[in-house]
Each structure stands twice: as structure tokens, then as C-alpha cells.
Amino acid sequence: MTDATDLSGSAPRRESHTSGSLLTETARTRKRNAAEKRFKAYGIAAIAVAILALIFLLTSIIRDGASSFQQTYASIPVTLTADVVDPDGNRDPAEMSGVYSMSYGVLLQTALRSWIEQEGIEIEGLTDADLSSFFSSEAQGRLRNIVLDDPSMVGETLELTALTSSRVDGMFKGRVSRESAAIDAQTSVAQFDLAEEMRERGALVTRFNSDFITKPDASDNRAEAAGIGVAILGSLYMMLIVLVLALPIGVAASIYLEEFAPKNRLTDIIEVNISNLAAVPSIVFGILGLAAFINFAGLPRSTPIVGGLVLTLMTLPTIIISTRAALKSVPPSIRDAALGVGASRMQTVMHHVLPLAMPGILTGTILGLAQALGETAPLLLIGMVAFVSTYPSAPPAGFFDPASALPVQVYNWTQRADPAFFERASGAIIVLLIFLLCMNLLAIYLRRKFERRW
Image (tube, rainbow, N blue to C red):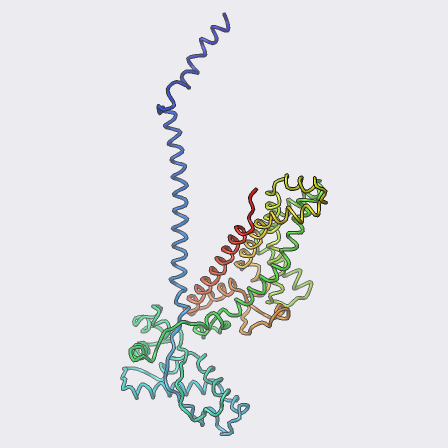
């Protein structure tokens, strides 16, 4: 009787929770469905915000940096007056090299004034200072090199395509307007009008600037001549060192920890510390590299070898963690089958487990390299921010030559006053993003190429 009474008493409560058809939406079902819809909406909103932020970031970088791949050049006839470039008249390059680049600037100024008179151009307020600052000081050096390479050209008139100053270049990229030229001490309205006249007559052209990719950095007053050639080479050297050191060390450590190491407190401590090292701020590795490789080992500053060693230390935890995850993803049945047919543990790992884990290992390695490629903080501490205008030699000697790196070059240019350097920095970011995109595409390709299903 007691049981019957209890059942009769509890039946209505259970019925209140289970009553109705599954096809009938109750208040509780509506509440659950509403919560699910809100959760989906939050996810869609987060993705939308992320996409908009990415679009805004890429748009601003491309808008500011795309113009760095173009440069303005002036083409005018220049007479190589013998009294200026070869005062002794010997045509001896050794003696002619004693003539400073400033003297060649006088030639350019004279040539520009002659061209203006020949074209019948009249511009109010045009001064000698406007003419002398029209060309880049880099143009003087290049004209000097042309004459020293072929002294027989002295006395002749050649059609020279010369690099204009950053202010003149900025007039055709939106950085310098007629209004801003009126209040800028390094240009003038007359120079702006002269540039417009030359543009209309075809003597001034803006074309693709391959020197931005191939040439080294330039001084603060030659922003129009600055390039990222040395920085690209330095980054490639460092990535080569990281790949050669981090990949074998990281994979070997992961195989030992995952396949052979005994499970005890010591290995637990090692695994925990590897995971913690992956979360250490990158600047800490820079301090470690400064103390260990420069102050203790005596390696030269600002060199790819030191940068590569520091980035290797920083990348190793990432490679070890990703490699261990790839090894764990291989089904135990693969190992059991290999061991069952008489293979040793080494043969099982090298012939069966490692090939199957290779897509994950390669993907983790490339992503680790991509992370190292974009690091700036540790490289600043080992002197990679120094001004370097000469290319490093070919490896292995080039590993010990001074060099820069792409992210450090970006940081360096953003510290300079000329707005043209900001344009250069944005252009270098575009190149860096292209490198990172290529590395990610390579990771995807390798993962799909070596991926095996079981």
C-alpha cells in the first residue's frame, strides 16, 4: 500500500516534466532553443567582428604601403662637365674619385635649370634651393658611379633617369599637397608647380620600384632610396638556422618523450616546463640570448647567427608540443601491429609512427617558423636594430656578418621623422605578410600531401 501510495503521489510531478508530444514546443523547449540561437548569434557576431577587423587591418596596411612599390624618377639631359668631374683632365678614375658627390649635385641642378629654360617654363618664386633639393642625394652618388665606371663619358651629355627626393615623390602619392608644401621647410609651392609641369611634359614618371625590394636601408635624409634587401636576406639566414637546429632537436626530443621516456616525476617536470616555455614572453629569450650568446660566448652582435639561435630557443617548445600531439594522434593499433610482427620499438617509430605523424610535424614546424619570422622584441636586445647598409656574405660566413630582419626594419623605420619612412614600413609589412601567407599555404599543402587516413 505504501508503494502504491508513493507511486501515485510522484506520478503527477514526473508527468509535468514529460507531458506533451515531442512535436509540441513547450515553454522549456522554447527557452532551450532560444539559448541555442543566442549562442549561434554570438558566434556569428564574433566571426563577423574578426573578419571586419582583418579587412580593416589589411586595407589600412595596403593603402599606406602599396605606394612604396612605386617611385618617381625624373629624366633630363645632363652634361658631364669636365671642369667639375675631372678637374685635372687625366680621366683617371682614382683621381676622379676624389670629387665629392656634392659636385655631381651641382651638375644635376644645372641640368634641371637648363631643361626648364629649354622648355620655356616659367614658375614664380623658383629658387636654386628648390632645384638642388628636387633630386635625391642618392641620384648624385649614382651619377658619380656612372662617371667613375666609364670616364670616357666626361664632356658628353647623357639622358639621365634620376631619383627624385621624397617630397617630390610624395606629391604624386598623396603625401604632399600644394597646401602642405607651402608650410613645409623641405619643399615649396614653386617646387610643387615644377613637378606638375615636368609630369605633364613626360619628364617625370612614377613606375615600379624594384630597388625597394633589392636595395639596403638608407640614411634618415634619403627615405626615397631605402630598401629591404638586407632585411630580407637577414630574415632568410635566421630562418635557415632555426630550421636546421630546431627541427631535428625538437622532433628527437618529442619522439623520446612520447615513445621511449619512462613515465615518472622527472619526465613530468620536463613536460610541464616545456609547456611553460611556450608561454614565456619572447623578450625573455632576447635577454637570454644577450647573456648567453653575446656576453658569454662572445658571438658578434647584429648577426643572423645570434638571431637564429635566439629564435631557435623560442621555437623549440612550439615544435616539441606540436610534434608530440602528432605522435599521439597515431592510433595505438599501428604500434601494436608493428610490434606484433617482430619489429623493434625503434623500427616501429621510424617506419610506421613517424611517417604517419609527419603532416602534423611539418605543419607545427612551419607555423613555428612563421612565428619566429615575425618576432621583433628578442632581436632588438641582440642589436639587430643597428643601421646596416651592406649585404651579408653567402652562408656560412654570412651568418656572422651584420644584418637586419624584416620586423626590426619595420620598427626602425617607424621611429624616423620623414613620412616616407612610414610608407616604407607599411610596404615592408606587406612583404612580411606575403612571406607568412606563403609559409601557411606550404603548411596546408604538406599536411594534405602526406595526410593518411585509417
